[in-house]
Length: 465
Image (cartoon, rainbow, N blue to C red; front, side, top):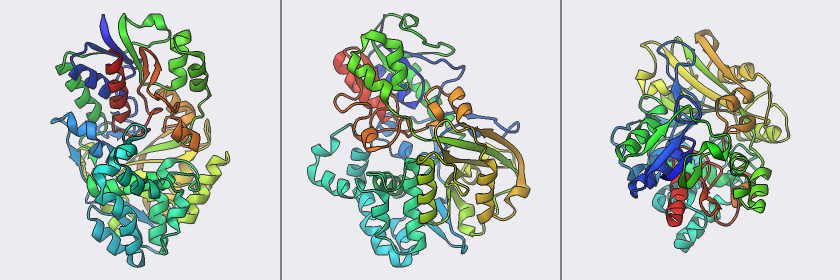
């Protein structure tokens, strides 16, 4: 008899399991695949010896996560690039996100004051900011003044935030950071996504997990086993009878999956809500092995761990609006990383790695390799000559690899107003029924390898236990 069984071994599922095991509970994690990790895995996708991150790659929220810090995963190391993020423009300049907020602001010239008043403000109050951004619903009510200060900026559309900036570099910085939300930049709270990620660059950096993202789940798995927890791979849960006897079941899955497996054990209104949630847009991803470093025109980009490739703010806003309208932009906004600049063990000497994706309509089967490569070539002439091997994955490939990525959605559900405020429901978002809980990225605070969804859900489950 287990105290809790967790279905799914992504970072949230493992953090939920560790939280319960630390409280003395007997815990079992069931994973359908042969390997654990969900969206945090590392594999040789192109050439032998070249290690690519299968889904997530750069981890500002992992490094800034309160629960990840509290778990003291001493065998997990963060590899920090010299420059957290660079955003190249056609004139050869680039907006830079540096660890030092003062230097970041200074490099923006006329936008220095605007940067200090927005991103700098969130970074200065990082302890409160991260508590609100990664906390449970209504966390801001515990510190109303600080919550109001953060919310005043965070709840705005990114388009409003961009109006504070006058230079192409400052506006592009806003667009690229907010573009991680995978929705039009006119949507409410897209400013909050950008502000949180930007401030994290100053507070904790934008590091890679040394050795690959799989190192994060490996460290969590070791911690769980040291506490007596158990993990079983190749253990797919299709129906309720596949579960062993347990007091509590937690799902690190899509809400619709939990509703299907639990059946009438979940109240009808909750099950209907779970099944009605809309996925976010899909992504098209490429993993590339290169014969040398990417020849970015701007020299600073060659030292950055993450590159936002999309041109001006206006270009990014147009591309993200097209995706939301069901179209494929000719010039997509690309989020890319080059992990070898900080973590050289990812590839043999002389070989480099590119991890990159762009947003596409949900369920798209379009091959976006050429548009992605064209955008990179635009800011790094000669890039194409360095390509040795490519692994392409469309939305169907992503969904086949990870059941939580329906239609290629990597955010656990659309980040619309409804998707933000009722994720997946307004009250008790982690509780499906008295002894059934949801702990995936479809719960607050949402996507990112931070484990906070699992932690908050586990605390709710402990109250039930």
